[in-house]
Image 1 (cartoon, helix red, strand yellow):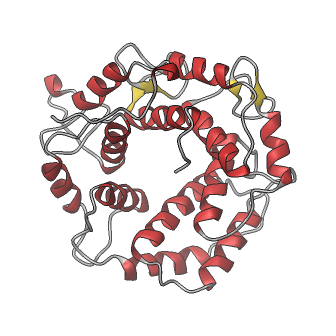
Image 2 (cartoon, one colour; image 1 turned 45 degrees about the vertical axis):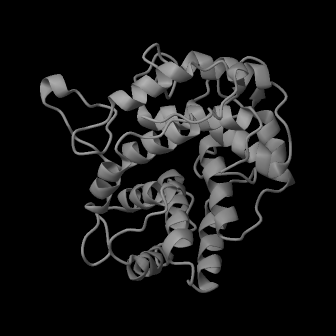
Image 3 (tube, rainbow, N blue to C red; image 1 turned 120 degrees about the vertical axis):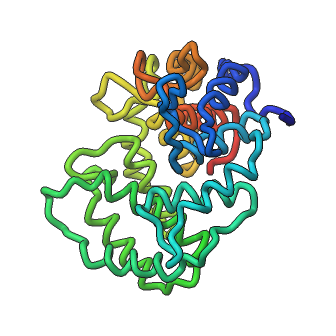
Length: 295
C-alpha cells in the first residue's frame, strides 16, 4: 500500500493512523466497503455509499486504497445494462467513486438521468406539510450525477431545480420545511451551486451565524444543544461558500476530536456507533477547517 502526503495537518487533532486503520478494516472480500462488516459472523455486505466514503476518505488522508481495480470493478457491476441503478444513491455513490480514479460506468446513464429529472419535476409541491430533507439530499445527488454524465440537460433543469429549492425554503431563508437545520441547508446550497443558482445570500449568512456556539462550534440549528459530523462539514462548507470565517474554529476542532471513536472511525454524534459515512464527513470537515477548498 503506497502512502502519499497526508492532507490533514496535525493541528486538526485527528488520529490519522487510527482513521486509516478503521477504514481499511471495513473492506469486504468483494472489493467494496461496509461499516457494519463483521466477517466473524459471516457478514460481508459492501455497498456503494460506504465504498465512496471509504475511497475518498483514504485519498484525503494521503493513503492509496489497496487493490483499487477490484473495488472499481465491483462498483461497475452495480449498474444495469439499460444504464440505470437500483436507486439514485447507489448511482451517485458508484459514479462519484469511479470518477475519483478517472473511470466511467459501463453503460451510458444519461437517458436514465433525463428520465429522473422528468419524474421529479412532476412532483414539486408547495404544501407546508411535505418533509423536504430527503428530497434535498436526493436532488444534491442527482445534480452531481447530472454534472458527471448528463451535462447537456437544457435550462429547463435550472427552472425545475429553482422551483424545488424555493418551495422547500423556510421563512428564515434556509432549508428545509418543516424545520430547517444546518445539514440540510448545506446540501441545499451545494445543490443550488451545482445547478448554477445563487442562493447563498444575506439571510443564509445571518442564520448561519446563529448556529455558531463557543462550545459546539456549529450547532445543528440555532436553538439546538448538539452538533454532528455532517453539521460541522455543512457549516464549514457553507461558510466557505459565503466567504465568512467561523468564530470558534478551536471548538469545531475539539468537537471533531470528540466525535472520533477510539477505533479511528467517526460517529454522527458523541458516543454513537462509528460509520464510514460519518468518518468521511468528519475528515472532510477537518480538511475545510485546516484551510482546504470546499468540495
